[in-house]
Structures are given as structure tokens and as C-alpha cells.
Image (cartoon, rainbow, N blue to C red; front, side, top):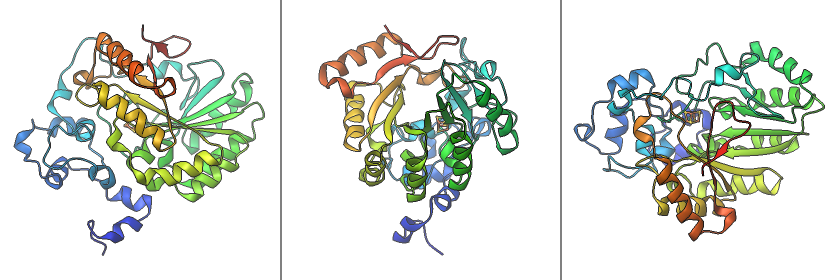
Amino acid sequence: MIHRTDPAWQVLTWQQQLAEAFTDPDELLSYLEIDKNQLPPTASAQRKFGLRVPRWFAARMEKGNPHDPLLRQVLPLEQELVSSDGFLLDPVADLEQAPVPGLLQKYQGRALLITTGACGVNCRYCFRRHYPYTRSTASRSRLSAALAYLKEATDIREVILSGGDPLMLPDHHLQELGAALEAIPHLRRLRIHTRLPVVLPDRLTPELTDWLTAIRLQPVMVLHANHSRELSHRHRPALATLGERGVTLLNQSVLLAGINDNVQTLCDLSEKLFSVGVLPYYLHQLDRVAGAVHFEVTDQVALELHRQMSARLPGYLIPRLVRELVGAPSKTPLH
Ligand code: SF4
């Protein structure tokens, strides 16, 4: 048996590493050498939305620090039980914009497929944390309706694979899905929204790269990192290969109180992203999902942080500060 601290741990497949992810808050805190009495109880929040953290990501957290910004993104806390006006189960009205189950069309020319409800990490602020994945996912059994919709909608140029995290699907499933999309002549681009390579760099397998770079559709990968410590030298080789082979690499972050709401952290993140070949794309204001009140940053603070970033960094390292407004024709810049 391979012990988790053994160097052989590094050669486990990404699926094996996922199977070994932390799912018990007490076990994670024990690994991080944090006395659980230092933190409020987690049980109720854990029952509503379970903890899930790959060990590679946990290893990037600072031991002994209950306020670690990576830990705070994933640890269920009592604060999640606080309700507040305007914080909703479906804050961006996903379900109202699904012409067929598992396919969302919010913006002109683009459609989004909810490919799976699974994620490599459960982020406490996730705007889809209450999404009814069991009945609203374009799973294999429901895919034909989504594909039929895409064939009819000849104005759609780009399909976004989302979830959950689409890279939770095995490569052969992605290949089947990609082949079905390639066969729709008016589609030009395939975009993948994923956090999995950030929290588990081994997900960027050669097979995934080969598929993504051989597909007829122009590939875009939008990663999701919120803090510079989420990225390391382990990301560089696979991302460099993707970039060299024509995949446009972008990042979207969420502005989160206590995680990345200071200018130095945001600048460090932009610098780190660029060092691994990824451009900062969006900095999102929090979608007001029930359970995430404590992560909200005011617009005034967000704008000031963005202004300070703009004063320190070149323009290509400044993400667009946006929020999603239901019914708007695109993400809405903050002014
Ligand atoms: S990885 Fe993305 S979809 Fe999954 S919980 Fe985190 S933010 Fe939500």
C-alpha cells in the first residue's frame, strides 16, 4: 500500500488522487495541525454541502493557520447558516435560462453545458452549490436533447463545458462529447471552465492535451484560481504545452472577503498566473448565493482594489471586474 506521505503518492493517477481527497473536516484540520476548537462547529454546514479537498491542494495550505486563505475557501463553517435578504438558492437564475435540461443560454452566440455535478473541490462560495444537478445535467442520457438544440440554434458559435467541473469526466467521455460537438458545423469554439487543474495539476494529462489540441473547434480553457498560493511550478509544464499547442488560457477569480480582498494578494495572483502562462480574465463580484454572505466584498471596496491594481500592474494583468446580473446581455462591469 502506498502511504499518503510516500513519494510514490506523486505517481497516483488523478482519479486515484481524487479518491483520496479529504471529505472529513476533522481529518483535514488534524492534517493541518489545527485544533478544531479554534474554529466554530462545522457539522451543519458540512451536511448541507460536504467538504471535498484533494490532498495536493491541502498540502498548499499553511499548517497551524485557521485563517489560511486556501483553507477558508473549502472549510464548512457555521457562518454559512446565516441567511440574508438577497442571498438565494439560484442567484443567477440558471434554471430560468435552460431551454433543455443541462443546457443554459444566457448570452448571444454562446451556450453552456452542465456536464456533471461533480467537482474536485467544493468551494463554499460556489454559486451552483444548490443547483439540482440530478435533474438538470446534460448527462449522457440527456445529451441528445442538448445536441439537438445546438444543431437548431445556428447562431451559436461557442459551447462552454461547465458543471460542476467538466474535467471530472474521464477523457474518453470528453472525447465522445467533443466529437458530437465537432460534428455541428456552425460551432467554432469549445471553452472549458474548470478548477480541477488548479487543485489537482495531474489532471492535465497528455491524453487530455492531445484531445483538446486535435479537435476542430478552437479551444479555450478558463481556469479558476483565487490566490497565488494555489499555483505552483507543478502547473507550468502542462499549461505551457497547452499554450504552445494553441489553447487560449485564461483565469477567472471571485473576490472573496478574507481570502483575496487586498491589493497585494490580487497583484500576486495576476503575476503568478502570467508566470504559468495564463492571463487574468475576470474578477467576479460574488454571486449572492445562500450560505456565502460572509464572503461578500462591497462594490466600493472592490472598485478601490481594482483601481489600485490598475496603478500597479500592466493592463494585460488586470482582470475585468464584473458581476453577473440576471437578464443582462453579458457580464456587467462594475463602475
Ligand atoms: S469547482 Fe467550480 S463548480 Fe465546483 S464547487 Fe468550486 S466553484 Fe463551484
